[in-house]
Length: 220
Image (cartoon, rainbow, N blue to C red; front, side, top):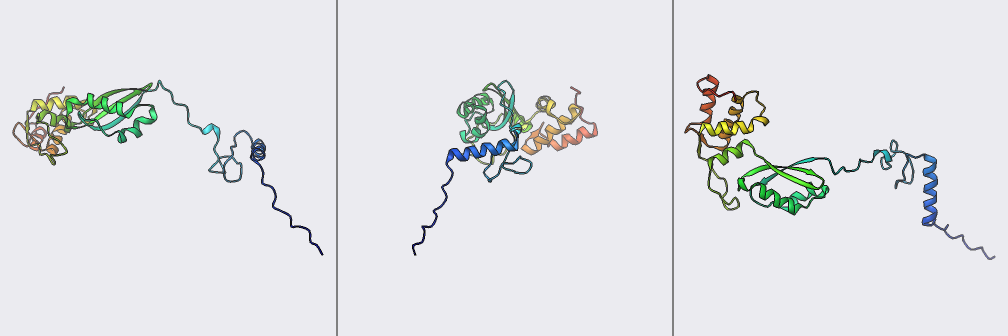
């Protein structure tokens, strides 16, 4: 007896036929459904892979002003690899931004400062937002040191009370204190952290004098 040949495997659907099947299933599911790779077409409420078109993020508006804060070393061009994830998605050149940061922070050479980038229409405006510690170290007028060769620098200098008041007035808009006296106390605390003295005395002694009323601070 001659047996009939075994039936071969069914022909797989072509790419065009599979596309037509997906279109038909999407039409049955409604306008909010989208094809996903989990062999089904469902809405996003039941399938985590399928998403609704209405949930897409809005388009980037070039006229919006975006603010980015970066920590840099004054007067030095930072690593491009650290700037690229922050400014690359905004259409900016990390190398150009690094050069602009070095140019804007040349007065703070060798000091760690915070820079503010205001980005609008692929143009960045750079400004320096110094901390109280950076202002105190700058007031010490120490000679420039190569931070790669000189480690663990001790800031054992001395500043005057007028310089402390000047730093406090600069930090006043960002201070959490209600009065200038509280801001001066904050700056004196930064002097303790830096390691310098004020008028030749320990900053903590001046803080005690302010609390006791022996040292008066102007209101503005």
